[in-house]
Picture 1: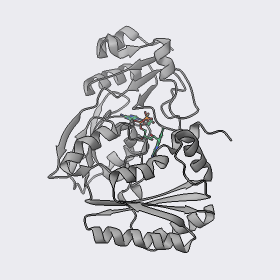
Picture 2 (picture 1 turned 90 degrees about the vertical axis):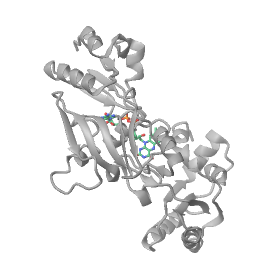
Picture 3 (picture 1 turned 120 degrees about the horizontal axis):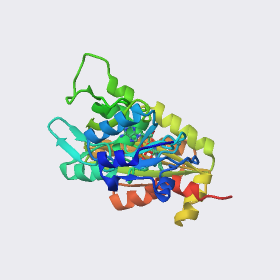
Picture 4 (picture 1 turned 180 degrees about the horizontal axis):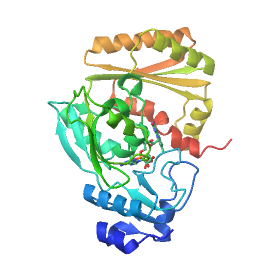
Length: 332
Ligand SMILES: Cc1cc2nc3c(=O)[nH]c(=O)nc-3n(C[C@H](O)[C@H](O)[C@H](O)COP(=O)(O)OP(=O)(O)OC[C@H]3O[C@@H](n4cnc5c(N)ncnc54)[C@H](O)[C@@H]3O)c2cc1C
């Protein structure tokens, strides 16, 4: 495919365009098994640059694939027809934090953990964080409707999107949704972009909701000899009206994989359930955890441990956090 590299360099600067084979190889895959080389990698820094790139690509029928961290597991950033991979990571400014409205405005390349690091001192957090939050960008999370371990209580990315600026395939810039929490009339086109995997346009700015950090978080772990018992415990927890802020299952293969990769020494039982409750009243959190413990016991859950302590909770959760990476190294 013919691409005018010099033209692209004029738009974004020489350092932000590459057709070097080593770079193309790096951008040829994501966290999936798929692989295809782009023709060029372009790294815009501004909305205007994105518009110019899209206008040029549209006029010359060059495919464009937007990309955040490339942590997607479905191959959606893999440029199967070649063309331009648009690396959005340089557009990584947190533009506004408005605690009074519980809203933030960000560029798409902001990394999820960086956002939460900025929010934490203000007693706030952005809940949908996927397990890849250390690298995943907000643009990639919007386009994939990412969810995370706390989505069972707090919802997925779609539930946090209020407004968006999107550059369309022809280079036009559209404002979707609103910068306020309430907007009652009109199509909710900002929601259409969520989960669109870069097929409808390039997200160049987003206004998202945030939540106050709960005062207390208690994480518990239960072992089960049988996977089916663990599954039944989860169904029971959900249907009993409990409100877990996390409810995750690891099966035996997952447990063996994290033990091998991280030497965690977890008991290699049929399944582990991690369950968490959070809130501002400790007695209420205790109550939720005890209710879930009881249900686990009813389904033969054992070795139940719980902790409010951040260090201890991080240790208990470390296996689940690294599960995907551990499974990718797993061989029977
Ligand atoms: C270890 C690991 C754990 C994971 N855990 C989870 C999990 O718990 N939950 C979950 O949902 N996913 C998870 N994922 C998948 C992945 O991390 C998420 O989908 C994440 O949202 C992708 O973000 P990214 O910045 O890497 O986007 P990319 O992978 O770069 O892109 C994802 C999609 O978004 C599009 N895109 C990127 N930026 C833009 C933009 N600015 N405008 C328009 N489209 C854009 C891309 O074209 C692509 O279709 C995990 C992946 C890994 C490797």
